[in-house]
Image (cartoon, rainbow, N blue to C red; front, side, top):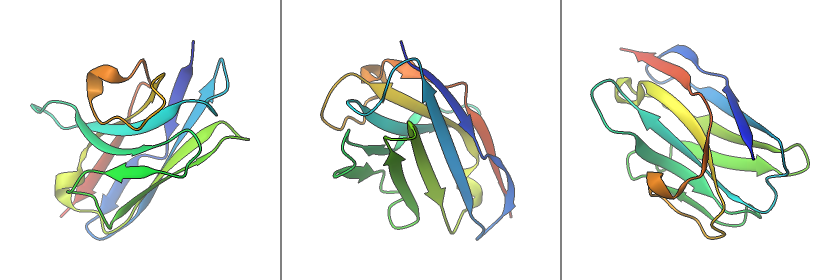
Length: 124
């Protein structure tokens, strides 16, 4: 079992930055791929970014490419999401997730463990 806890959400103005962190416990995450997803009110949960177990490969949704950066520190059992140039449409609850699949995956149903989410609100 892996427990995930997100932090770092909050209220920020358009163009601002936030850094989300995901702390894992229960077992090391050094051998699993990790991802960030988000869900806005009335919308389905959508893929944001993912990183391979080693950190050597990453993938981003087109809507955040060039603005968001996913990273991980396996020694600290953490995964981060640096969000720059934030827009009102980035407003959502952001979730950290872990999958037992080795390769990077972007499909929600392929992730096995989820955090409780952290709210990000971008004001215009």
